[in-house]
Image (cartoon, rainbow, N blue to C red; front, side, top):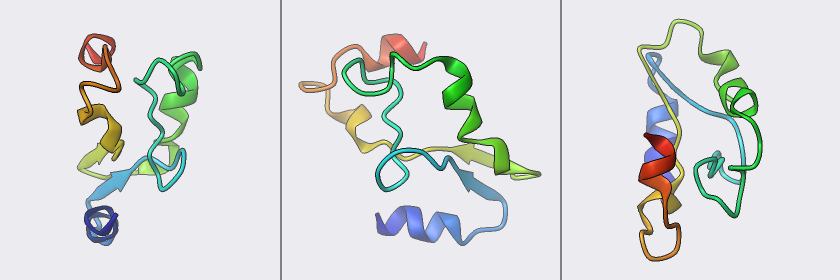
Length: 74
């Protein structure tokens, strides 16, 4: 959470605004994958002229728990 805080302070960085602690978990089948792509893209509506745009869903790295994330991202 502290890394997100520091990134949020940078004027050229925009992190999506969805989910708990800004973690939308969109690419996790059991969480928000059933929502449509439009929902996910709407999390970045306030990005403006940011150079770096992204999100911070830590569970994407939990391969044993969140299976299939890389395939859904591709």
